[in-house]
Amino acid sequence: MAERKTLARPYAEAVFQMALENDAGDQLKTWSEQLFLLAGFGANQDVINLSSNPEIERKDIADLVIGSAGKKLNKDGANLVHLLLENGRLTLLPEISELFEIYKAEHEGSIEAEVISAYELAKDQIKNISDALKKKLGREVKIVSHIDKSLVGGVVIRAGDLVIDGSVTGYLQELSSQINH
Image (cartoon, rainbow, N blue to C red; front, side, top):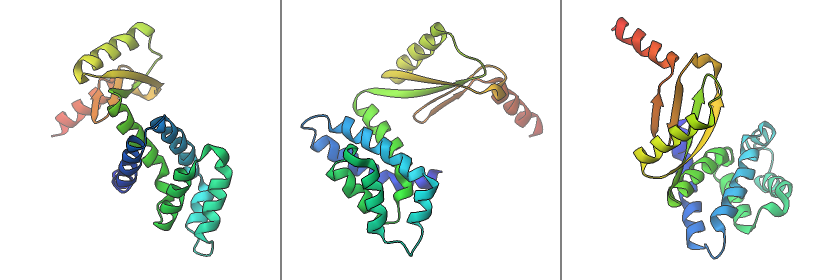
């Protein structure tokens, strides 16, 4: 996973810089929407199979992706598809999109935090987590919460490079590790 992000990083950085330089409107938003759309193609098994088939022309694959995206993809988005296909990197689109969103959030002074809990959190709990993260990170925080019953209790928080494992499962794994060493 880390290797894919490493490969995707130069593309995401280049797209982000291009969006900033050409921000005569809403280029960050436009690119965000285009990359989200393209990420679906990059993760689609049929598209992956086509792009790895040496008997199929890259131009035909690009035409398929660009045609399927329709008017939701501008000229720069189409050029990105061609570039990625030429370099055999079309399948990196999900990672490119994810990295772009991180750069965009940093630029806008916000961060998305994923909060995973064993049970649904109350609104006041989410607000408390958001306020604490805002204080710690010095940015606006958007909380996205998920439920994972395997955690038993507590929460796991991921915000950028920060990971806070306050789950019962995490605590038990830590305790087991300390006992075994």
